[in-house]
Image (cartoon, rainbow, N blue to C red):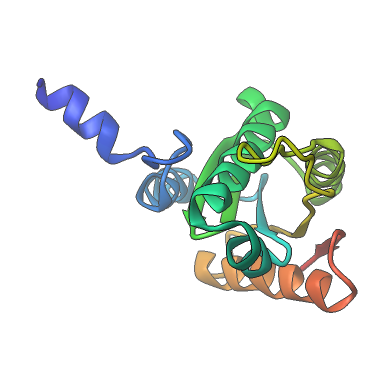
Length: 172
């Protein structure tokens, strides 16, 4: 196995094929080095709603199928507009260079809607699971503010979305 391939695989999430958390932070660091680019970068945090119930009711292997299905939708909607990553567990993060908060919120809403419309099928029974939903927080980076503060703002917006009843988008 070549060193290049090993490095490439170390930046991918093994389950979903999305960029992993390390890759997310590497890209953020690269963007941060150009303050003007950071000023036009947004981030999205998304979390699968009631995911513990999915694991408890259908098992962890099925939960992996749900994570993979959501990752695929996020990757399809984001396309080449940004970096979609699995941040951890059932949480996803997207970096959107060259976007303003309103554009990011529109994209986040498109992700939310696309996930809700997608149906996951239980491979054991063939039954269609009800809608899988996600809650999303969006924030825009500011070169004058520490990047981790912006990540915290997106995370706080995500939890506001969950507290509002889930399956919605909030800005931070």
